Image 1: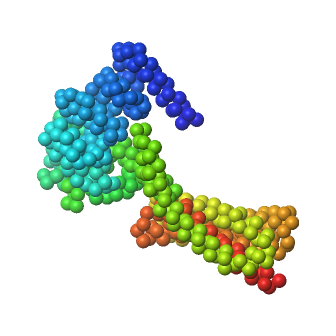
Image 2: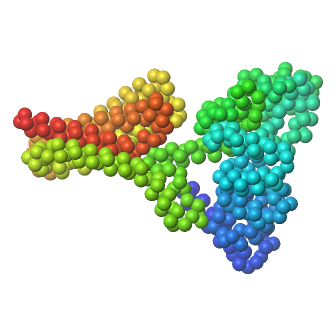
Image 3: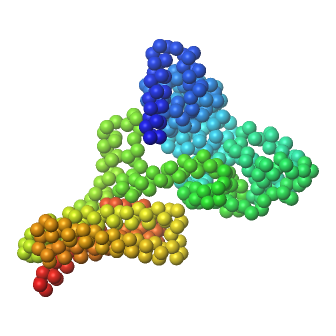
Length: 460
């Protein structure tokens, strides 16, 4: 429902903007754009022609234009800047937060990065260059250097005066960070505590020394987990010497969570983020990216299928003796794949949310095996009854029922163990994707089915 409403609003915005452009009614369009949210304007811009984009962006106030630049993608960011005057480029870039500039520049060629950095003042340019040095996906790359800090020997009065002077350029002022003379982080003060404290009181007497920090080299996903765990609005980023290098704010954490979730979903499906298209991507580029992304896992699946075929070849005599067995192969492999995918999905999520730690590993394994065991019993009874209704011989119904139970229990076990093993050896558990899990379960399921059938049919 919310998605449908969002789409309706988008089409309403787009149609209104296009109509005002056709009517050449720039006055009304300017008023309309100023009432829109920057994210909505960015979305509309992506669906306009280049000349229309230039007109719309030119009608925005400086504040609104800055907000829109922070919302659009890197390529569009670069294209829009090219059409602006030197003075306008300098003004807008000066108003943008450093982490947003870095986010846009990181996806552009280095030569274009240097062209845009040249429009920044010396201090901002140095800060942006420093942030670009850090590896992609680390706290250092995600942080901003626009933060508020005071010395621990300041008085509350002097700290508030300092805050007034630098607050306009800061990303957030909810937390005031306290450093020593070597810029090492020693404490933090909330804005509320600073305001209500006596003006003559020293900062080190009211600061909180129980700090929650992250290192510049920490993975951004770990940063997001820390912020979520402690319900922070921002978190300080320090280097190996505990020198305060920047902060990561809650809005950046939300972006990180979205990025990581998207990455995990693609991995789990045996694909990659290269399949996230831009509106101006050609059909050839889209097809090429999808093929390159999906083909490796599908090739692995082919080899898995060939192994399954070799299993069937091994039991060709059993199949020839009773062709009815072949009727239930798709059902057994399909149900096993479903159970395995369910278990692996739950396990990967629990790993991501740190539910699986210490004794949680054994508890999760026992839980998923137990689930597979009991749903297997229910499904095996249903399948056995269905086999009899379908006129299968009684011993075939027994074979199918027992195989279903064994296959679903095994599938739940594999779906749980594979992500845990991947985590143990340092591989992203999300890589334990559906193609890998289902291929493995197909092999084990068919082996169980025909081994049991051969044994029982030989014994009877």
